[in-house]
Image (cartoon, rainbow, N blue to C red; front, side, top):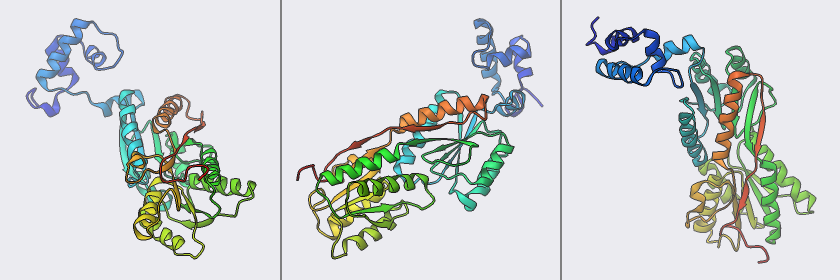
Amino acid sequence: MTINDRSFVTAHDVAREAGVSQSAVSRAFTAGASVAVDTRARIMEAAERLGYRPNLLARSLISGRSNIVGVGVGDLANPFFVQTLELLARTLDEAGLRLLLFPAEGGAKGEPSINEILHYRLDALVLLSVSLSSGLADECRKAHVPVVLYNRTTQDHAASSVIGDNEVGARAIAAHLLAGGHRRMAFIAGNDGSSTNAQREQAFFAYCAEQGAATPMREQGHFSIEAATAVTRRLLAQKDRPDAIFCANDMMAIAAINVARHEYGLDVGREISIVGYDDVPMAAWPAFSLTSYSQPAQRMVDETLRLIGILRDAPDAHEDVVIDGGLVMRGSSRPVGI
């Protein structure tokens, strides 16, 4: 081994080159550690000359923390989760944490990759739109890895959650459509196993019943453009087709707009109202002008980071956080009174 072989440069080599102790080198590369300004500068200059980089894995073995947060993503086809992932990566980085990304579909199919990830020394596991099975909850508990569900809830007390206020949102959408004079409404659901879909669906149907409105028609779009396109065609082919459609997310609503406008020649926002959920950036595009209930992704990410900070020190201090959003009215739904 030689100093010129950068792969094997150690903190001891840097200490010798800078004329300091090895502990001084360690402090120089530790945020917030006490070390004289001139000493730190001398150490950094020596490290740069030698091509030294601290071994983060070795540090994690000593400190018991890796500063790595595992993030499992269930649906990268949905712009809401792409936006969330970008915000999460930036927010974690600003907090000195690193993101380890992996695909996770939830259920038995998704668990092998998640279990494999647990072999890393994760400080926390965040699941974006992925349900938590009892088996995965047990594995995380054994590995002492706190879990935060994003946009999902669970009955298992071994996990925390951060969600939007789905009940308030769905009821606000129902009230908006009824105020617009709609009487034949439909709901395009996501996946049966999704807690967020269940909350939106139950609240929407409950509000309609409370107001004495007809029970909405129901189809299932599985949170996908393809499935939502097919079920929208089925709804609009009926003799008494709906005059309003509430979709459990924006991507399905955009698919419904395309079918209504381009296949059936309907004036969306007048002859039929279509409303989504999430308020993804695409919803504001003039081509769609989609009325949607917003989920404030940055606030949800900030709460996720807060929970991670708490759970790293107190793994059993779980919380269920609900973030309020708001109805964003655009051209895809009929204005009240028309």
